[in-house]
Length: 104
Image 1 (tube, rainbow, N blue to C red):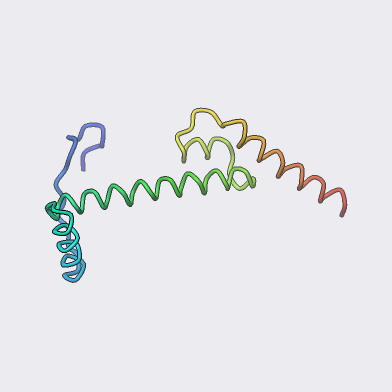
Image 2: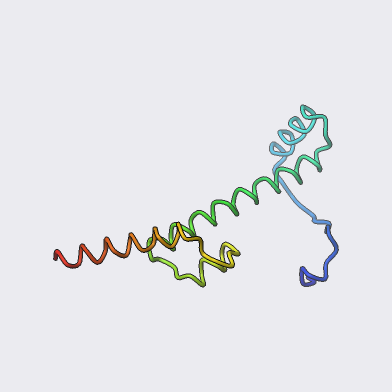
């Protein structure tokens, strides 16, 4: 497969799916008065966007709770800078851990 940066804007895929799923897709596409391939493309784009949002949220949570570092957060989220509120939340967690350690 060619690197993504040299590929055309779209590519053709061969895809095998369950017959019952195809029937449901066809029904939904008819209901919305669009062709089933347009419906499938939109559904995939919507799903991928949701997964990206979830991955970003989980990465932020992991960063705040000290499970990943700043470089990993930036890699996952494509952030160039970590916002102040996220940094402050991480500091609060770190301070709570320090306080717990003092009491033990």
